[in-house]
Image 1 (cartoon, rainbow over the protein chains, first blue to last red):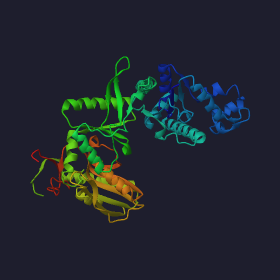
Image 2: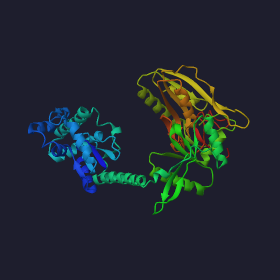
Image 3: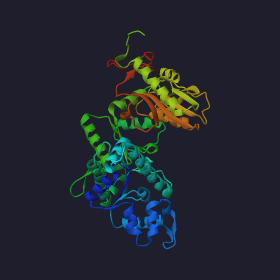
Image 4: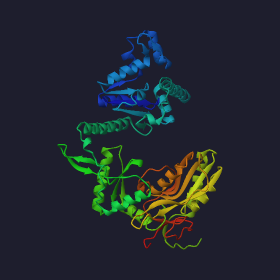
Amino acid sequence: MAILTISRQPGSLGDEVAEALSRRLNWDLINRDELIRRHLKSLIDPQDYHFLSESSKYFNYHSESLNMTYMQYLEQQLLKAAESQSMVLVGFGSQLIFADHPEAQHIRVIAPEPIRIDRIRGRFGVSEQDARQILVTADRRHRRFVSTVFSVDLTDASLYDLTLNTGHLSIDACVASIVAIRQELETMQRLKSEQIQPDVKLNQNLVPDFKHPAEIEFARILDMYQIEWKYEPKTFPVEWDAEGNVTLAFSPDFYLPQFDTYLELTTMNQKYVTMKNRKARRLRELYPGIHVKIVYKKDFQSLIERFSGQEASHE
Amino acid sequence: MSERQASGGRILFSSEQIHHRVCELGRQISTDYQGQPLVLIGVLKGSLYFLADLSRQINLPLQLDFIGIGTYAQSTHQKGIVRITKDLDLDITGRHVLLVEDILRTGLTISYLVRNIESRQPASVKVCTLLHNPEQQLINVPVAYYGFMIDRQRVVGYGMDVQEEDRHLPYIAEISRSN
């Protein structure tokens, strides 16, 4: 099932975003306290329960009764729960527990420090100095938990698919962004499950059968630069009718394996250029991992001119 | 400098604008490399003035070299291959290298040069280009620094030429349509 993890700075409204998201998607919302309450409270004595609430180190302690660490047990329970229910998970390093989960997206919610201080002042009715101290302590605790349990810096941007700054975005805008991403991924998942994706044809064993002299010229230029290329190695369906029949497909002219990039030449008139731009746009939307570039007539001519007896510099 | 604009049309970047930006780039590069020795490699011939001005704004232990590429026809029926027409004089093994280019459009040439430089096992290779049009870029190259973004127009001056003319113009101008 789908998982959204929310890592948040204190005072960033990350908890509020998570709550609104949980309501909007009708998914369970689980934070650190709820996680411990659900899965550990009935199994451990009150003292251990208290320690878990207070100390990040305690999550790494080995439990005799569970025959594993508390964190290992919680991870096990969460992964099991994720098999049958979609969840919004807040904090406790959930972005690391589900780092490799195929249906998990990881969100980081942040805000500029002065705004976070203002929010903490508003919430607790404290002075600016006290609010700053609360913030420093809370930031340190969050980082320490993830660092102690997972040996990872939670502020590492590469852990997240999306970072939202509530200094500029409202809670509703954050929720809308996350939901839009979910919908896009669900569409991709649907296309995949309907086996539309396997329609992508592999042509790479075919001998190049160039359709246009410009393609031959371009292949020569790539050869000159010693850039490996494949001619029309794949056909990507980009539009379907209501019954799922492919109505528009796109076979970019060249694929450059070294750069994982597809190139489409447009050396003809404007109406074809418009169609090719549309196909390329659809391809980017439907296959986000695919890099496709259009080589426009003017750029192509510049390349040709460059090699008509002159040096290859001035590029 | 004379007011003659032989092949150039509208001035895109004046010599003052170029000087100001080159100073900024020099400061940024000096900061980024944090005192580490650097080899600046200018791509002939277009980077000539840019390299000369940029290098004098970099506050690091610095060595300069040039590389030139051209095409070599394998036969009368083929376009040939890109070849090195002026190779490096310095040994760059284990050195930090910054390739200095006048203009980066498709990225084919600079990509070739980056691969060539990388084969000599430097500590790092980055690219600094004076003019950059990411929309025209067909392949990814490690552009760490650029001076100005430009559109698809052809340009001349400050090292860039029209049939070997007008490289010496102190500004960068759009090439007029008659050329």
